[in-house]
Image (tube, rainbow, N blue to C red; front, side, top):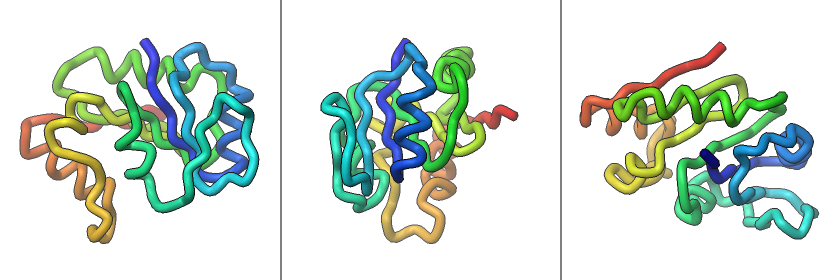
Length: 131
């Protein structure tokens, strides 16, 4: 299993790339000036830019991650079709088909992620938090 990843900031990008997690799909970087050639640079206009370009489940990262963080989150996500998202530390993993059904984040919302989770809950879906 693989997931696309959207990172915000240089520290998060370096952390994701150094983790060497084999579950990494395409990597999108928001607000970074430089990146390796295989990373897609996007202007920092919010998470939706990367969410809308994804081809699979997508992780949003805004800080440091360690080890096989993404593989662990993917394993948890795929234990049940009723899980819409998994979060751990500075990362949240969103399920691909749920994004197709309820859409990306509402930029007008005070807390876009919480509003997204509320829409997912209306479909009977749940969020999981890993420690």
